[in-house]
Length: 78
Image 1 (spheres, one colour):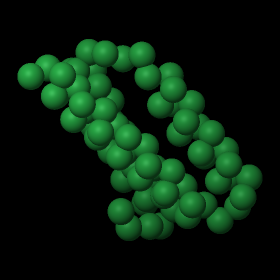
Image 2: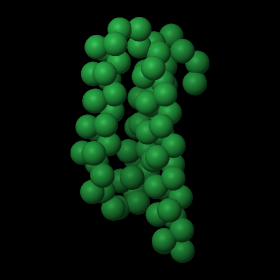
Image 3: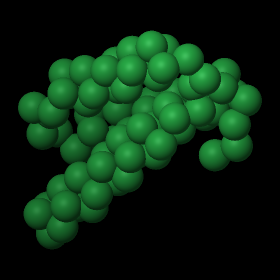
């Protein structure tokens, strides 16, 4: 059962990562877009070693909040 939960969490993390990258396309300045994508990647790479499911759930929740904030900042709908 734990393997299934881990798989589901991994899928959710990848989905969030893709959504953030797609949303970063809304940055009008190419340099800002590249910097934003780099920061998204760095943040995900920094947390990659996390194995604790509670920590991963917390990070997912935080990431969804940041996705919403990014959308508001870029004036986009999710």
